[in-house]
Image (cartoon, rainbow, N blue to C red; front, side):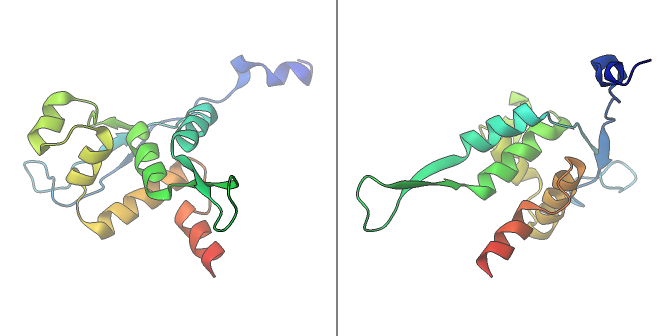
Length: 143
């Protein structure tokens, strides 16, 4: 097999789904936290999510001059919601049971402990191949 042919899609390794129990408040009959299933998102999906979460902000004192700003909290929520396979965050019955209308709102309602949510965000970012979390980058930029 030539070196070039190794780049063909048929030779690309399949990424396996991951599993994680994000909250202790949702448990099975034995009292163990429910495990959720996550899938890898594609670079294109990530780019679309990032674009949806980017806004133009006017530069102070510079009329008609704008800079882009990513809404990091929304970006993380959408990345997590897109990654979740089970439970189905897009399920209307599940959303209705929490009184919410979007997968992102449902995610926040289901994992409503800030520490657990932060751990979930870190897990998903690392699972998606980000070795340094987005929050780490934001904190580094602030310092």
